[in-house]
Amino acid sequence: MTPPAAAVGAESAISIRGVSKRYGTRRGEVHALDGINVDIKPGSFVVIVGPSGCGKSSLLKMLAGLQLASTGEIHVMGRKLTAPRSDIGVVFQSPVLFPWRTVMDNLMLPVDVRKLDRGSFHDRALEMLKLVGLQDFADRYPWELSGGMQQRVSIARALIGEPALLLMDEPFGALDAFTREHMNLELQRIWMKTGKTIVLITHSISEAVYLADRVLVMSPRPGRFVDDIAIDLPRLRQLSVMSTPEFGTYVDRIRELFNVAGGIDA
Ligand SMILES: Nc1ncnc2c1ncn2[C@@H]1O[C@H](COP(=O)(O)OP(=O)(O)O)[C@@H](O)[C@H]1O
Ligand SMILES: [Mg+2]
Figure (tube, rainbow, N blue to C red):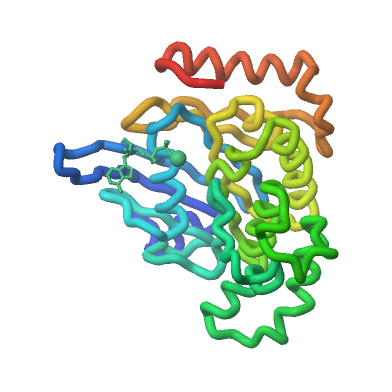
């Protein structure tokens, strides 16, 4: 018996069923994703890792409601996804801040776009700035901030509407290695404090193992999930966890999958 549509994946934060993605281009069709099926529990931290061009960003854009799947269905919080939604926050690789807006005004962008009352979001905005450690920077402009700080503004902005789900597409890819590790530690703290469901995409195996409860490994294009690995390392994970044998075992297992499936930079 098929369950009623409204009940599909109701207990999951995200339910992806039979999703594929094909793009029509001038040089023919690109088959980006194939046969994606997964359920993601509320409050979990899921990291999707895969080689360049395997369809990670395509999948994230579909989860954000920014583009449609060619086949299949996605439910978020029990509701079928058809368009972008205010209960889904998105952070992209580059922070996409407006240079003529202050940090606070950039934070308020979703509030302005939705024509809501800024006043009722003020306390929330200050709270989010504090969460990302930028409480003293509300009146600064993006060009006065480092790359890591700019990306923290975009994380705060993605959280301002209290989304149940936070999607992140290689959010720290443009940062130097030192800042990137620091941001990973901060993101873990934010996740532990807020209890959001996070889906983060990366092509760094160690970033995936460090952050995730669960790592979904993708094959080269057309992307499919080839493994689903529970990362059983205690929280709060300090950066030093990366030099433990347990951490190394997870990294080796994923790297091995890539070697079999065909190449990745890690
Ligand atoms: N809008 C688009 N039109 C045509 N092809 C696209 C489009 N977006 C992505 N692709 C192609 O789909 C494949 C997957 O891309 P993408 O999802 O960006 O992968 P990843 O994020 O894993 O690097 C690539 O071959 C890419 O060139
Ligand atoms: Mg991408």
